[in-house]
Length: 309
Image (cartoon, rainbow, N blue to C red; front, side, top):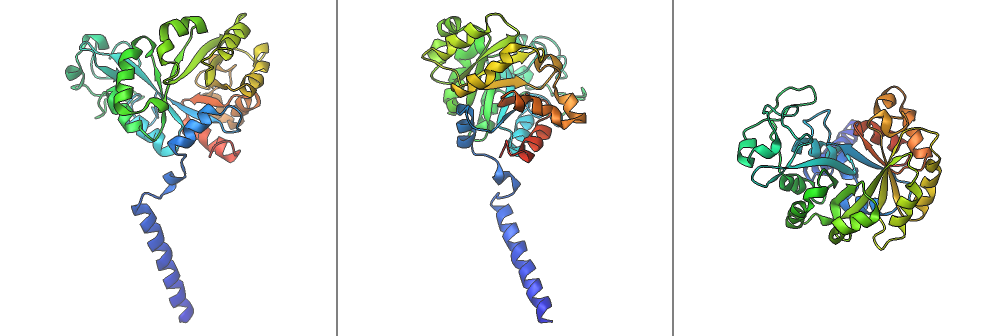
């Protein structure tokens, strides 16, 4: 009888402890990295941690570029979310990949031909094209949801970054924002120079490219050494793949997308569904930032290998 009583007391204590932790938010999500740890990983090319970037948010389980798609990424422990920025007719910035509304909303026409108030009347579609209750977010709303939780890559924002930066300042998210551009250093210095020391900038280059070495050297030898380079890798036979380790050793990370085959020499997310070890190609080639359409799948694999906390 005493043993049963002791067992009951022990179970009660464990239940109370778990309930208390849950009420304080100390559930599985407490294991996720802090924003400070995510920034540290982003700026440290020499550690063994692989950064996971979710393409347009968790679009398989919520409409792409929606607030819910961002929230899902935060919950699962994604390091960075990639979102797309468009400008409305009345100068507001909203999340939308396409120039038109047709594919992702129940509206039609160009984003720039609609005011923000009119866009607010529309609903987003999910990945199957079904209209949902989700609304088109503004950049400010997206950054407020992301603040102190997840890094944010603002795609399609290079040409309108003056306006983006004002919202970044307003939301206090400068240290969380990543901007990318596919231009050489001198051009970026001329066009974007005032922001190179204010947000994280990342050059993009498609491989193969005869000017790859000069492109990388110009950035690495500049006063604005980037935190990383994004490369598109069309085949395994590209010699420049052998330079990735050296680039990381010299202080810049390597970003390669696992989205579609032409980004990664056919080592893409859909292949990984059937053969998860496809992702070893990235690891073996010293790639430490991966943008994916299957964030949970990639996270699970990296955590199993000790390459993501």
